[in-house]
Length: 150
Image 1 (cartoon, rainbow, N blue to C red):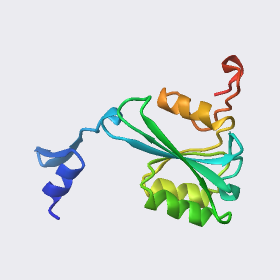
Image 2 (image 1 turned 60 degrees about the horizontal axis):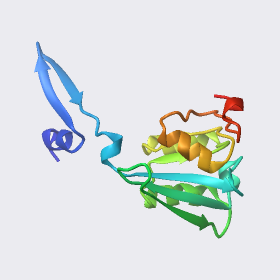
Image 3 (image 1 turned 180 degrees about the vertical axis):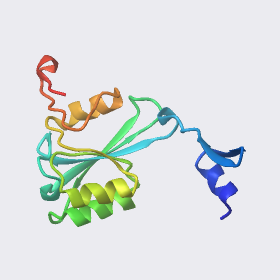
Image 4 (image 1 turned 120 degrees about the vertical axis):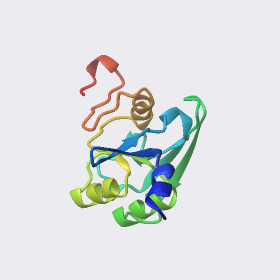
């Protein structure tokens, strides 16, 4: 693939000025593309450890924040490797999790997956915060929004 074709596929424009080459990137608005999110679960909470989660929820967001599909997946056995493989094969672009080993965090971010780690609290509240644009790694989310720690 030629550089020009590659740049077009990622919304980039190549310009030159005084011998310097510039890549101008126009990000695709998030609202224009569906997001696929995976949250490892422990009951109704974000699982405290990524590598020990026996179930996960896949959430696909449409262009309308209220247009979403949720799918609960029970893993046949606990395995961070299998979970990473599932993330890649399902086209997941965002992971919300509790603790995650550095090896898996680095692998997922290398694969261009956005990872919000060290998140504690109900998975529905974490998802709502993500949709609202306010989720950060390390957030502690409670039933009482005034008591939340960011």
